[in-house]
Amino acid sequence: MPRAVVTGGSGFLGSHLCRGLLARGYDVIAVDSLLTGRIENIEELFADERFTFIHYDVTNYISVDGPVDAVLHFASPASPRDYLEFPIKTLKVGSLGTHNALGLAKAKGARFLLASTSEIYGDPLVHPQPESYWGNVNPVGPRGVYDEAKRFAEAISMAYHNVHGLDVKIVRIFNTMGPRMRAADGRVVSNFVDQAIKGEPLTVYGDGLQTRSFCFVDDEVRGIIGLLESSWNGPMNIGNPNEYTILELAEMVKEVTGSKSEVVFEPLPVDDPTRRRPDITLATRELGWRPEIDLRTGLTRMYEWFLKERSS
Ligand code: UDP
Image (tube, rainbow, N blue to C red; front, side, top):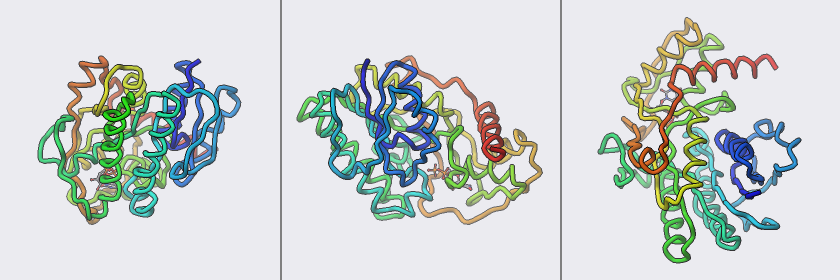
């Protein structure tokens, strides 16, 4: 059995990734500090003897017994609300944490997959964004703590590839949504679904004409595992290229939930990107990957999950 270490394994995306890897036949060791991850996300996996959880902060030296075939570094606050609350921890897990995860991969002769982000592109001047675009990031703005941490993480990962020959893959993840997002996560989809269920107004920041492209988590995980098992080295966008304005998203959430909530406008956060959409030519060519679940279906699944959570 191949053995994978997933840092951030009890987070929203990390916990789906652990399940995807277990289903694919990996033994999985999830490591998480539980800063923003949740034990509830992985509780049911404890019954599987192929799954191990280690409560640990990977900004410290990481030691794992036995052979490891893959290290997937997913530990980091990822919602703007979270990384604004924990700016130094975000910088540390993107820098020190990535260094430690790379060191583990090197010591074990494992392949390494870094969870990077569309935030690499900042407020993009090229649209849609191909991997070759260098981005438009404000290093000293509030989002810089996340964006620059991930940019550093990409740089050190490529340096380990170039200097040590480490097998390095970098997934640039665009807005991802689905079950197990925290209602209080602060991101737009979870906010809107939670607000719609509670009959509260949907909070649109700015004029709502900014765009995002939302990928359902099952599609995202399939792409990530495809990348992990491919021979590709370097960055690859994995995201859904269907682009929506935030106002369109609010309307769709109201339709899917049957909510009568009104839309209210609140100030746009500083440096909020105006548009975002992945160019997935590379993923389609190299992996044959493309998303299969549309936004309406994804929202419906998320809505059903939020309802179930509330009633349990
Ligand atoms: N947003 C919004 N209302 C909310 C939360 C977010 O209008 O309650 C907007 C936010 O300003 C941004 C977009 O939705 O333009 C996506 O925000 P999110 O925090 O989900 O992720 P981002 O793509 O900015 O990292």
